[in-house]
Amino acid sequence: MSVVQPVATREAVLATIAGMITSILGDDETDETDETRETGETGEAGEAQDLGFEIGMDTSLGEDLMLESIDLVALSERLADRYGERVNLAELIAGMELDELIELTVGRLVDHVLGGIEPAGER
Image (cartoon, rainbow, N blue to C red; front, side, top):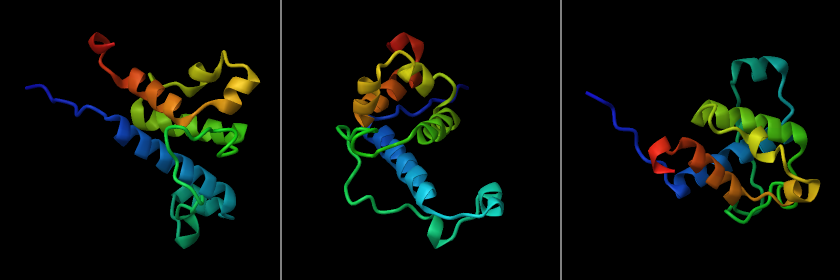
């Protein structure tokens, strides 16, 4: 008997990516010890910070969220952990000019994830 994988919706992927970004930005603002980072145990200080706005499809990674290269590396790792190696953020941004990278939106990232997790026959 084969297991049917649920189809990821645009809204579900958006919510997952928004959560990842909020967590990454929260990690930047938090002064965690190395032990906390290793064990993954966080208290109130490790909870997601309030960005002051909702992350949506039109939110840009550079201009709106001001993600730095280390943040993109962290996001790439989390995306690969969650969706598998077929969702490769480095591959998406490799050919981009600096302006394109700054203007990269969460929506384009959502589309990239959806394209990477669709069964090969559905592309």
